[in-house]
Length: 639
Ligand code: NAD
Image 1 (cartoon, protein in one colour):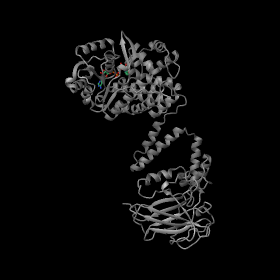
Image 2 (cartoon, rainbow, N blue to C red; image 1 turned 90 degrees about the vertical axis):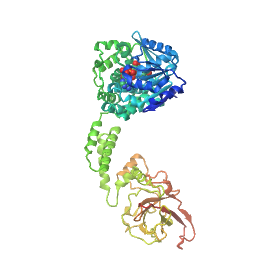
Image 3 (cartoon, rainbow, N blue to C red; image 1 turned 180 degrees about the horizontal axis):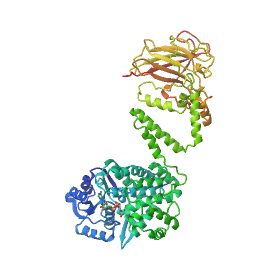
């Protein structure tokens, strides 16, 4: 069981959205707005003032970090003097904090326009400072009525604030995943926020005006803010609160320095959350993944750089561990001192036990080695093959012995193959790859007969046989009168189409598998007549096992899979001007239709091989009865 309380707020997200602010104010029934900002954001605040026009009652530009109560009191005077009925804050978490502090005391509806990634606009939490002490409280009264995210406003956010407040957002998402209140809804927000930030932050560092990266970071800030507003945080936030509140360290920079160390501390206590975070970061380990991401950004990397002195570590650890709070790993004085010592020095945390080495640069090197391949398709195929193979090896933690076995397996697959035995096709078929390629290639022509895999027993150029012939030539089996028609997609008959037919005998063998078979058996090439029709005798196909005496048979046995194919008749229909159709018709009611070992059965290819008695259309009258197969193949012109 889990519970999730969605905090109410109307959200407008996009570029140029500050143009909607006047409407948003009116929507609330307000007409006298107090506009909150900071002098460093004068340009955007002026633009919002213009957008508000006559709705603007007053401005207050003194919002400050950690929401000092004396600043709030000055702002409240402005509220009273100007008969304000709505507060509109534009800026980072500090300005949002001021709007919340006013809302708490006046019940005025706040509209927030966030310009950083701190996420405060999504939380019912207010942190305030009075006489140098920071206190936090939670109240739905401080939740904004409306949040307007405008990507344009973030384009000029200085790179360092962008990156540190981006990491601040990531911290909300990380701690949400191992919160005692964690739930699947918030998890999705958190993982998406981490994914978005992991790619957006390095791009913003390179090009702060990258609107796409900016949009992703702002969306991540929204999601991460929602995490912060929905579930309880843990060690990381507690430490940053201590360092900010008691040692006056700057908010988002402190988050940026501390996060990897808090994560390293919690790794053993929240292995599942850390695994998911590592996946979202596309890194082998969550804590070192975040460390490496931040290490590459132009931001402070140690508490020392933030002016924190080594001698303060003991005191900070004491404050941070004074009161117990929920955390996935027990919080001890010694443990936190050790954590702070590492954060003070900025050294890389040790990856969690059992985490895998980071092989991304090796993969990149190999992928890059194909970068100059002149043929673009070949380049794509090779580079993706390398990525996929490396990822497979890393994910499965492939051992040397397993890799050698795989090489040996492929070698045997090649050695057993010749012009009659095609073990590689069998491998592709039993792994389902042939069917995947078939579906990708042919599913885009829905008005033709579905195709099916060629299989390993096709022989090029079988002898052309006259219509009406009997492919079985006295072999045991139930006689089958086959009467098929080939048409185009407008049902116009296609004469002179070459139709190759092949199938197994009653014991399940193809002629190429029988050492004593003399020439083609149950295999022929026909030509459709002027009506696009083709009639011949054969026998009802039976189920059969694919050859199991090679490496593929060994694989099926090791996997406990049966080797049987559902009974079917192969057709290959070709005519210049038409797409060649390779397909199979399956006997309705036959064995293994739902577990065909090569995954070749398609619904449109299961056909009733109807039981008959009496004389067949050509006058022949098999004693023990016979069956009839009627089917129309639709082929499509190539143009
Ligand atoms: P901030 O609001 O202090 O802004 C940092 C600096 O960047 C300021 O000088 C600001 O004027 C400037 N700035 C902001 N946006 C800009 C832009 N678009 N272009 C140019 N300059 C811009 O920092 P912050 O990291 O957003 O917020 C930190 C504060 O928010 C802290 O006080 C923290 O406690 C609080 N906070 C509260 C919550 C909560 O849920 N209550 C959540 C996160 C943060």
